Image 1 (cartoon, rainbow, N blue to C red):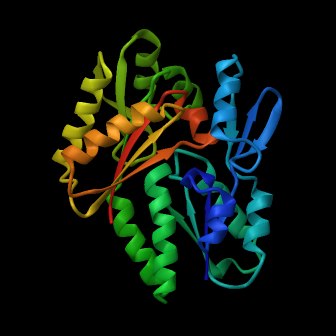
Image 2: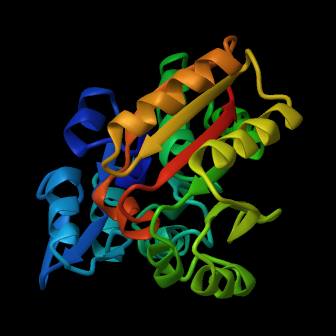
Length: 276
């Protein structure tokens, strides 16, 4: 059985290979050049070019690259994609599956998320595979986790999320008229991004996220991820607050990949939780 994801899971391909999974790079374009996430450009290098005025863009893995992976063998495969609507990756993976040599052995799972929770799901899939669970049981266990995941985004530069087209129309309009900090989350169907509230400071924005996590019952059975786009000190401070407020939860600090920085923008903080 093969476990597949892309770099939106914040796992470099080499790291994924060492952990028993196949990671397909997402492509990013900046300054008229295209790079593969992690292997050809780092987040620090990417942020430097943005700071110098370059405007980036990203795309999901090409259908041909996915098809190459799906046709490598006839074993059962589980491909965990970025949430449908947050990226075109799910639809591209479904298209590649339809073209594959053995489509009946390929299972495409819409994670309905990205970054920290997607990273957790990929690693959990490997662990369940090593326990010799059936594909059906692995998918059922992952689906339980998927439905529990929540994500909150606090962008420092709103135009990146607006440009990505992943916002609701109302949110995009809001971002163009106000100079405040919006706290954003996924819509109920988890396909778009919408505001939770608008705040004047990082302190109050983070407090809003914490209150929402408490309302959702986040606790000992959850993993909380704090992801950042080039602001490790700010993220570390927020992580300390998470650990104090949710002391029973498992926590982790992650840096966003170049492709996800394209959407969230420099300085973006993402706080996520998933039931383990």
